[in-house]
Image 1 (tube, rainbow, N blue to C red):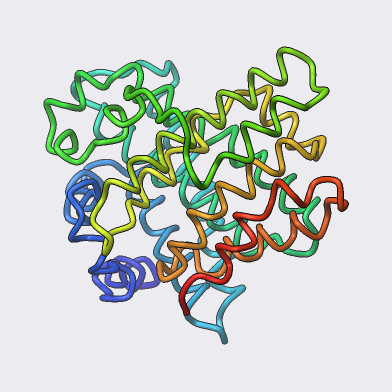
Image 2: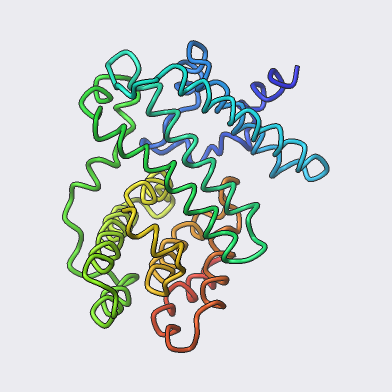
Length: 297
């Protein structure tokens, strides 16, 4: 009965976020359900995400739903591994695997934003773990983009196109990051990892800027973490200032998507925590993220 209640919640108007569903790059819930009905690991993850939604909205049952969702997600991962002992993508499973990977990556990221706020260190530790899982999205997409384009999911995939475009020479929101990397004492490999993270972020910001004012393309924002290199993730684990400042600029996108229940005030939390953890030496590189917190209601 709990599973049925969670399944029914997938049709909840709050869960569906109508404003987001109007965007062409948002995969309709009907597609998730269609594939989940014949794919147990995807159905378990879909129900886990529904439980996560209720853990955010049902304050009196917050931890009950979160623990239930965690159990469903653990079972989903187990079923996925049983179904795919050899990670081989084909036309028969590419859509299911992509939807599962995307859903679990977003779920883990947003769970960290909501539930790991005791300290920046606690969040970063959890976030780094999420990134290692989320990177599976990139692996599956890169292997199967030509297969995915032939499915119903393919019509909603704009991320590959965006990340093939050259970034703008300059970006008003990200100029401080280029100045930062010009003066950093990071090793060459670490600097390259940060530069790649910034380049991908530039591509997302440019795509957001070209979208209609009323639409924030959150699928692109959720795609950015999947593109981060292991070197950059390790810099985050070490809480290197350069990596944290890049993350604070990414959090601007999250803050601008604060109306979406998945994110809430996660962007504000992240920007405020990073700014509070870095000394005065670094504050000049954080002016734009701080200013973003003053945007709108």
